[in-house]
Image 1 (cartoon, rainbow, N blue to C red):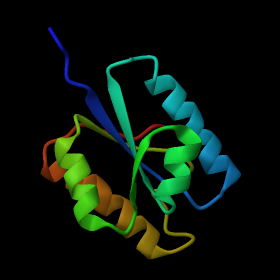
Image 2: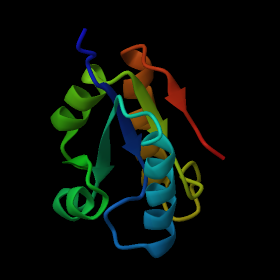
Image 3: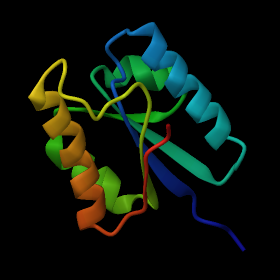
Image 4: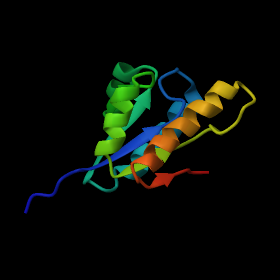
Length: 115
């Protein structure tokens, strides 16, 4: 029996070249790869670099339809790393990440918020 890959979508401040966030992403991907069935897709500001650097699928963080499509096809949404849910840098940032989580919940996907 052939098993279908389980898609995990990861959202965060990825693709901006921030060493701390990219390190968090690398660690998260490393943990997820312990399950060989997982197909990982990362929402990123620079999808080409993210896909190349981390050997994952990636979609541009401004591509709303691509993000929705990825989440709909996923089994899980991980909103991870670096204190995303804050309004110190900008209230738009908070609204963006809450919006991604809202899309996941709208389509009844489990949402994980790592500490």
